[in-house]
Image: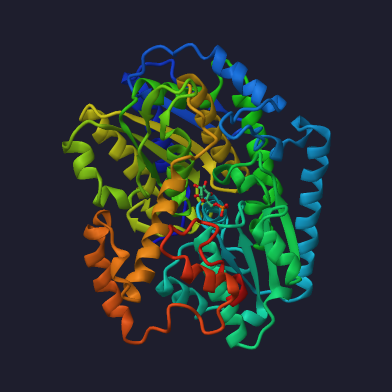
Amino acid sequence: MPQAFNSRNARFIWAAIGALADDAAHCDADTIVRSKSLGLTVDARRLQLPSAPPLQEAFESMAALERGEVANPDEGRQVGHYWLRDPGLAPEEIREEIYSSWAQIDYLTREASARNVTSLLLLGIGGSALGPQLLSEALGPGSRRIAFLDNTDPDGFHMVLSTIEPASTWVLVMSKSGGTVETRNALIETKAHFRSRGVDFASRSLAVTCAGSRLDQMAIKENWRDRLHLWEFVGGRTSWASVVGLLPAALLGMDWRSLLRGAAACDASTRVADAENPATLLVRAWHSLAGRAMVVLPYRDRLQLFGRYLQQLVMESLGKARDVQGTLVNHGLTVYGNKGSTDQHALLQQLLDGPDDYFAVFVAALEGAHDKESKEVETGVTSSDYLLAFLIGTRRALTAAGRRSLTITLQRVDAFHLGVLLALFERAVGLYAALIGVNAYNQPAVESGKRAASRVLALMLNLRDNVTSAASDADQDDVEMLREYLALQQSERKPSLPTHATPQLQACKRNRTESLSSQALCDGSETG
Ligand SMILES: O=P(O)(O)OC[C@H]1O[C@H](O)[C@H](O)[C@@H](O)[C@@H]1O
């Protein structure tokens, strides 16, 4: 009869933890940091690291950043995400704004309860969705259901909106710029869904955006329930510690203050340039293994979004064409990986037998919320035992194959330790960017994709209306796919402009031969 967790399992676990240490026996000994206060160990002993590069200047630039000096030179901005979890570091007026954002979160949390809100619908993309998605998955299930519209796919809209009960749902529309097209499109679809169900949208909607943005103005004009403001000095990929992450976490009943406590504790540790700094091990890994991909393997389902989250944090911060001197560097750090042990059935074959072009980052959480309920699957062994054994076993196999890995071990996945983990990588990204001289806080390249898309839209509108002069030579190789798409869409398609098109939309149609700037993308708010 399978037994629940018992002392024998505990012995198995301690033996496995001992293996974590024993395994280290053959590794170089000076690259592991254990922090009891953070509940964190970073073990880089299997990376074959050379001695650390000089980091003093990187730490000095980090200190200047935290003092509020401009650290995003291309956009002339401060970088203030560390202030969000320790407002005492922030300039006076900003400190008060941070505290009042927390008060607004508490107020809305009470309001949601008073109004029997049972579910949340979050509209956002990139940093305006990934943070909330990671927090809700890692710390869930929350006290309310949450769904996300983080793309511009009608199938996705249908799949999610068909499960939404507008009357008991609050809509969180998140966009720092307030002009991101995918979020605008999702907003139009969501408004239509509320209208189709005869439910008032505005009284159930919160705008999370920079003051004065188009989204902010819309929320004022349409009298939405509330508006929560973001600061220019917090980038999308580090906005989880602002209302972007904290508001949904609070509305889901999560311990968002412990998230901030964990991040603040980690910040305090990684602010100091000493041997106990866990972030410098990641910096040393990225520096000495430059050019290799980082394969992120969290061995907990709660962290299965962590790799996707790091793709934005790391690749949008470090993937840069030029360094701060303007020298062409085309720097990048590729991130992939989902979760263990699942990825052992997908990536591991190549990781073991394929090119040695990566290093693995294992993330272990020694205590799972339900480990103790774990049934015996073999005599004296539980599923939980297997999870840790698979991590250690996979790491052993990689080491035996001469492959490199770093292991981050957390006590458990709770708000405090998630805050620690997020802050660890934010600091490592900042220090490493300073070390190699790239601006980690802008994302100039992403605009090019948006501009190209607006030109394609103009071409599509002209092809749809058979404006023969539409396609230039450069367009030819796209025309075939566009024509195929249009043919499929054409049958039941409505006119290319809504019948009640506003003057803006009419102008858009008349001027469509020019490329549609991201502003002129026929702001559909009036039609929403
Ligand atoms: O929050 P938003 O202004 O809507 O931006 C959402 C995302 O889109 C942009 O393309 C940036 O690359 C991301 O850093 C940002 O998080």
